[in-house]
Amino acid sequence: MGDRGWGGVGDGTRDEVIKLGCWMPVSNFLVDQVMQRLNGSQFKVLMCLWRQTVGRNRAKDCLALSQIQAMTWLASRRRVVVSLRFLLDAGLIEPAERTRDGNAYRMVWNCPPEVVIERLESLVTKANQLRKRTNGGSIREPALVRKGNTQEESRNIEKESEPPPFRVDWEKVRANMAARQPTLLRQRLAQLGLESRRQEPPG
Image 1 (tube, helix red, strand yellow):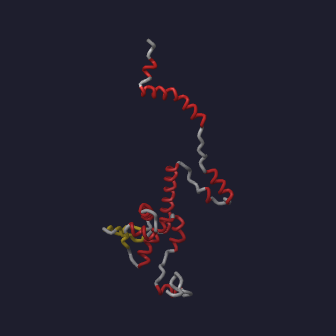
Image 2: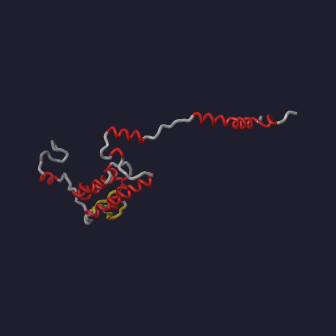
Image 3: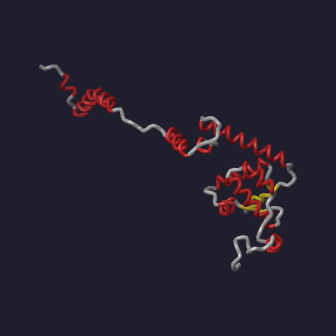
């Protein structure tokens, strides 16, 4: 590529970039409306499928979970599966066919944008409700990313959220040991066979 940049051209024009074929078209709707409603894993998987279909001028592409994981660098296959399920439920992708090598997916073009946004909002709300039931907490933005927080306020919030240090109540420990000592002594004497002798009245 010589002195060309990562885009494949130096100071080339848009027509030259398209002619070289080193770029792929991406829908404005995905960047402007969908991206902000997806987490990192979901958007990575979406872009992976987009690259393998639209980016390669294919109607569909067959991808194994291991291939998607390798392309997205996600930590586990479970994240791939969860992200695929989210995109399927949102109506952004759909299964084309199932093969021995994996499932073939294609992008959904005929779904109105407002329907996609409504599905995404519904899925995000359900995810928040599930997180609330799982964690037993309220649905709210994390304290460290709420608007108006300064660095000092963030540090105070972190300190308040830290669990209290573990302390041993030595007075209770000593009291419990003192209460158990007679019982432990009798058990030890019984093991040595001395308990019954000690309790026998003198002849």
